Length: 216
Image (spheres, one colour):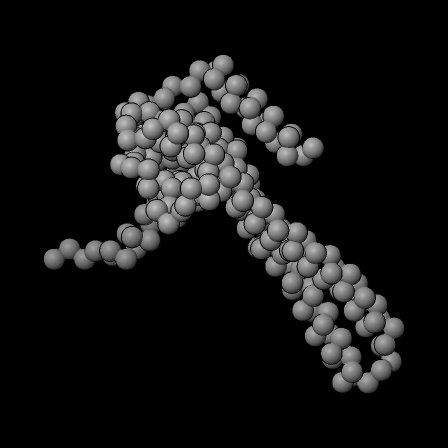
């Protein structure tokens, strides 16, 4: 029997993620996410009450997961497909999608501010502990060991923020910003879109206007 190194074969397997993303999501620089629904509650949580609606968690996760694999510089267009919605329901859905993703962006911003404050405190703490180590060089070894522990703890925290946690926060911040700028369209059937240059420019202009409004 032919001897096969099946483990090595699996380890050498490469993904085709870029091909899949371009094939399924990207059209002329726009990341479009199709979502077929069978009813209003597929998008809006059935636990919601009028004027206090929230997104269905499964729907929220579906959109966020799909957006995560698309390039970070691509605007997102969400195509909700179905013939089961009234115009009022479409208006509510569009508003709640915008509000819930904007709320999620606010949570990410709070986390970002918390980590920036931690970074500043650790940075100055590192400087202070380094100065204390320098001016207390003549002290016995035992007291200085506590300063060494403090110095390395703060240094490790700073490195983690710069190279690990900071990267994750910036990635989450970009994704949350893209989702907060999402555009929603409704259709009864799915047609593979072919965005023209004027449609792409219009979308970018709308997003730029919305972003500027949040900065005022």
